[in-house]
Amino acid sequence: MTLFTLAIAAAAFLTATLSGIAGVGGGTILIGIFYAIGLAPAQAVPLHAAVQLVSNASRTVAYFRHVEWRAAGWFLLGALPSPLLVARYVAAANPHVIELVLAGLILASMLPSTRDSALLPLRWAYLTAGVLTGSVGMFVGASGLFIGKLFLRPEWRKETMIGTLALCQCVGHLTKIIGFASIGFDPLHQPELLWPLLLAVMLGTFAGKQLNARLSEERFRALVNGLLIVMSLKLIWDSVDALFLQGT
Image (tube, rainbow, N blue to C red; front, side, top):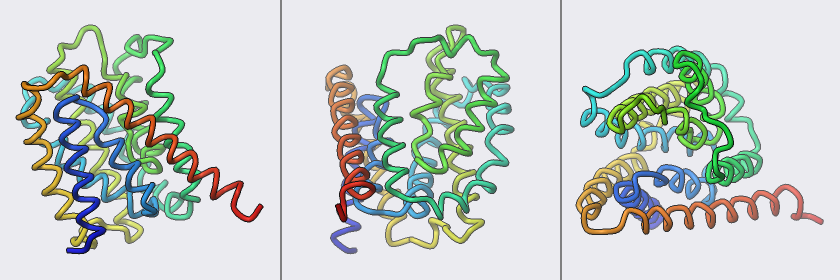
């Protein structure tokens, strides 16, 4: 195992631990790290999707009986066609533009919501979430940034939100993997990266759950938000430097 593999496996472990404690943010930080260390989108996104598929599958199993199946069905309908159509454009996209878009989405997701997305009818809310995951999510990887608020419905219990979002994220990540595999970017073809990442995320999720009861969730949410801001600024600097400053 190379030093590079050890480093990103350690990052996967730490981000999974943070998610286990704070409940949010780890997957977004991980895809940001993938881009920050120079992985191309067509390599970073399917790897991230495979890792997050495992992570979300465990939550889906835990909250399976609380899943809102109508919402999941509409999400699947919206998510299915897009990845096969979009994957080739992701492979050809400028990674620095994607870094800039990801940074903008991270910062925008942290702003107070100005309208109640839960007022959208269930069908249109989850069709929209599926389409966004299968299109924009193919570029930036972390689709929870822009679909998460659609799952905060006043008529749903917390368990329903967690279970339904986890299942929909599983569907979204699986469609991303299929989309990239159709153009030759299969994460299974990178076992030297994939298996250490999967092991690290499983261990990190377990560690986070063990620490959750002992540590302040609010404090760790603040830590995650701080890390997201730092990651965004790093991505913005790298992309602006590459796009506009180099060679001037």
